Image 1 (tube, rainbow, N blue to C red):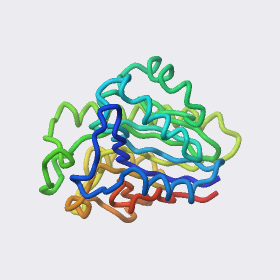
Image 2 (cartoon, rainbow, N blue to C red):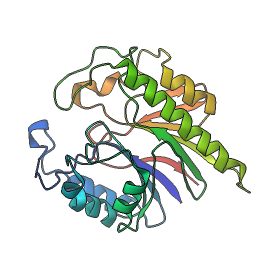
Image 3 (cartoon, rainbow, N blue to C red):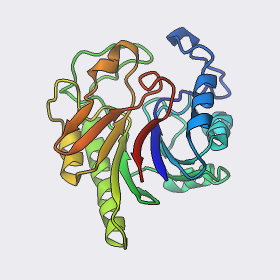
Image 4 (cartoon, one colour):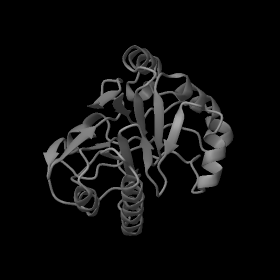
Length: 245
């Protein structure tokens, strides 16, 4: 079993919103080809937010079916553009139930699949962020209440992971999956990096950054955590291998 991640699939939804104006010509076909060639049926893929341009659940069904058709077991996470994703665990379970390759989603909780224990949250733009590109695929306005809420949600997810880990009979591979960068290229600690680094996951994967903003994310190892950027264009429209068991 291998663990991959890809963020920011930005699937078109029934709104048929294409990505050509961002230079993603023919999307998502290049991603489909790379995914189907690389990922096996027993592998796990974290889909790290900004899954679809849908604004409501009725618009997202075809995109969820597209993901379900790809090889591997999927763990889903909300991004800032996933307006179809609600805050009800029960409603999300019902929405995802027909898609048999979806093995879990992160909402104030953790997902356990094989050796992997995956915790996380969406996060938000931290005040430590450097200047970032704006626009539809750019940065979000800093909101202190969002930062506090997302740090709390990350904490809840990690607590759930810790509870699950206590019940395991074999060691877990800890993974943190978020959408916004938990830290930036300036290396300044944020409220998010402090929480996740205390948990000591092997890898923290994130997305959100695109085009000229890609270089703003922290990539490398800090406090024993390997930070990986896996947004679609940063990853060359290919799922990123995080761990091989």
